[in-house]
Length: 268
Ligand code: NAD
Ligand code: ZN
Image 1 (cartoon, rainbow, N blue to C red):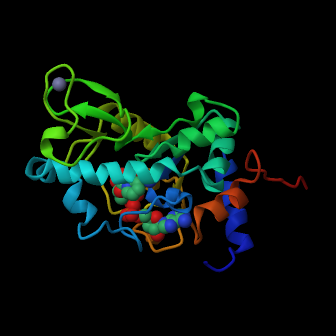
Image 2 (image 1 turned 45 degrees about the vertical axis):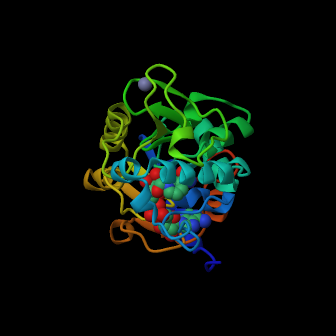
């Protein structure tokens, strides 16, 4: 548990978030940590003897598709029992209170969407721009076929791995692996938002993965404010206008209050 937040930091962050102009929210693995989804680099972020950076790559899949499939099946199974935490919920409520917030996530879980549903709106405003795809879908390694992941797969041997119903090639999770291109439409939307945002709220990302980290830096370079919510050190800390050192599930509800950022301006 991190120490209590400074009231002055919270107050400044609330003023910045309530200011005019579009807001960009950039989330990473950390926002889902309190939902029980491990981050890649934190404690418990290792899977058996393998590092995710050695499995979530096209080379790993070419070398041993069965091992990569097995890893993803494990991650999918773990995700099935996870629910949005108060951080996801506070964010979804805040996004419904304003039309000019764009949420860009590196996460491949669906916890942002589920939070939107839980606050009573399966509303496009609560849907994130997905930079790294979604773990609930598969796509073909050879053709354009994409489909929801149908459920547990037999990963006991390469011969039993799921195959494309259209062309018979191996299916793979519809996520972006290290070293792969990001979906162009998502990058375009994130870039456009970053270029006009007056504030960027960064939650639960160490800032080591590009181009995702670059979107927050665009906002900073254009003169926008940067608010960082993370219990650990991040690459954004040196340029943050406000660092709120704490877990997303504790800080975001406090920061965003129920429904929106309320700022009282005294008229003298
Ligand atoms: P990262 O593992 O590099 O960093 C996670 C960050 O979250 C760290 O800075 C850590 O201090 C912080 N954190 C830990 N607990 C937190 C909490 N309770 N509240 C707020 N912050 C907390 O993750 P990353 O920078 O997002 O990038 C790693 C890549 O891994 C991404 O590309 C992403 O696609 C993928 N990934 C996704 C998921 C998911 O979908 N939930 C999970 C693991 C990894
Ligand atoms: Zn195919």
